[in-house]
Length: 224
Image (cartoon, rainbow, N blue to C red):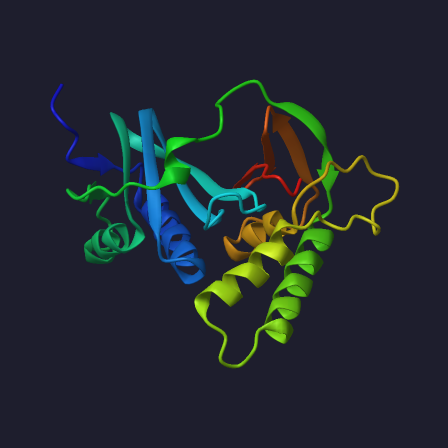
């Protein structure tokens, strides 16, 4: 089967949504995006938090959006966010054809993606709780980072804050699974919260927080 050279998005709004998603992900971590197309559905995965060293007790936290395609495609590739952003920026107003970058990258997180099925609902979390956790964590990191801190120090602080279990004291009457604070950071950063309660699902070592705007996927680490 010949390699797919481009994806035909369903319409200009889908192109705009993908552009926003890629832009938000780059602002958090200008890394890579895994594109998975099957039939007329495209799933785009980005990684916001992951272990940076062997044995680090921090979960892997992904953001994922699904988008419709106008033409069926079969694609599994990981490319830089910058390369996709460049191609989206060159697409004129109503253009829906997204050329795929020819250069692929290797990311450990992209080799272990969440399952497509087998999810069981565990409970739900209020959007306000997630928003507060994201703000609180960001403030805690900003206050703790020394002025001349190097990258290892910053990464260590981020891992400690975002890898810690989410405090759910504000929702005592709810069934709340153990979710890392980094999931709240991902949901807010990627613009996934819509003001509604966020259902939480589990499948093996994975958790999924789903809203109308996208999904946060958590693969538990030793800290959980």
